[in-house]
Image 1 (cartoon, one colour):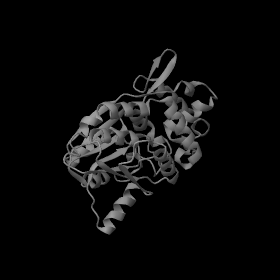
Image 2 (cartoon, rainbow, N blue to C red; image 1 turned 120 degrees about the vertical axis):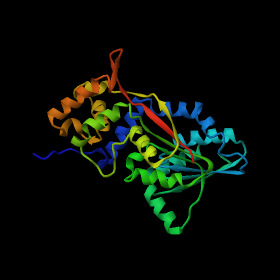
Image 3 (cartoon, rainbow, N blue to C red; image 1 turned 90 degrees about the vertical axis):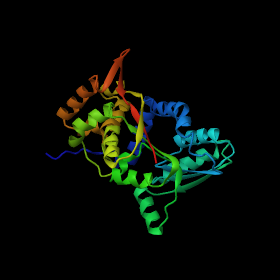
Length: 292
């Protein structure tokens, strides 16, 4: 019998709901903010030396929450310098949220924002057609390489746009995370979607070595509380299972065998840790900083 499982990305409103729950139950944003607070100032310490303007490109900027934190660190490092912040983001909804966030955030007077409603590959095609190769002082791709068809070509293209002292920052799930283990083991049995690739920092490091690019990796420890996933019929737990498996209504549409296997896998120490009666999934991220 053909499986009735379908990708979570095929149901936009359910995906948004599951993603919101994921952020509520995980330290995803906290671990990124800690990295921005503690490590980013050192990473960007040379990008604006001797410049009257700094050009930043955000690839897959989403709703701008993390972008604005990054910009505040650049402002802190280079007070008074004009910043041009361009954002590539295919979702009109996310761009709208980003604009609303900018409108209510103080001290952005010296930053000029430009939004491009397109994917990274559409941006690349548009620039190539115009024969424009604008150079950037800082490019970042945060949690977006899962949605790219040709990752090595994408990294190579944006790396080629770096100024001499610039940096390219990639943040995505760590090769040591529960995600990497889950995807490796069960990816082929879950509804594959053209929109989303199961890729971790381990894959990116391998590709960077092959391309011959110099990089540095920072591990960002993070967890997600998945206790509710083990409570039968719990609505939040079911939504988190959808997010973990990238499957719409996973609990209702997966075979009992697959469901049991994944539930057992989630309890293993390679995926999660049990603490004070709760189950915390390993949501570790990696920040990869690539040199020009």
